[in-house]
Length: 233
Image 1 (cartoon, helix red, strand yellow):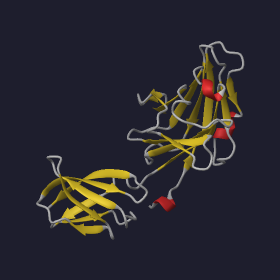
Image 2 (cartoon, one colour; image 1 turned 45 degrees about the vertical axis):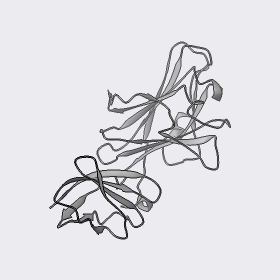
Image 3 (tube, one colour; image 1 turned 90 degrees about the vertical axis):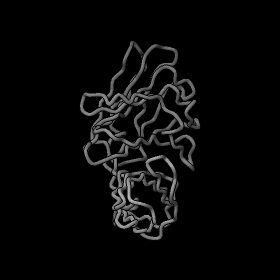
């Protein structure tokens, strides 16, 4: 699988709820956040100044075979950033059990649209089983006028996460299904010292390193970095 062949599994259902006494709070067009249409959206509304919050939970069809989770969000024209979205929090679940990863939006997981600053994506790397994400909007969302748009949610499997690497006679062979040409690879020994670095032209390369356990880091051409362990024999 390559990035060009990513299969997106979109949210297939949703639930929503209002916490606290709040006139005008709720989710408008909630089903617009479900399915593959990335142009329409639900609107999470909350009245400014009240101790209330509105939540929408997107439910996904898979949990065991995906490691990336993407949520498309936006505003009614206000440019997005982590400060503007300070009243938005997210939390993933496997069924009704929380993964204890509750967090407010921050710049590490928020990617802004290049052409439309009022739209962006929340991107999470998941290492626990999950089948839903809860999006909360509370009364602190002042800069967006008390509402947040949720365009879509999908999960997919990033083939570069937990990629397979095999070492033999100082030579390392990466999973043949990965398109790694142009990527940079680094080997780090058990003392934490970088001992090898090169640009890849194929999935096999020579390291000329002693036998032992190493951490192999792979930086793709688009700047993403992933790692795995490899035993050189």
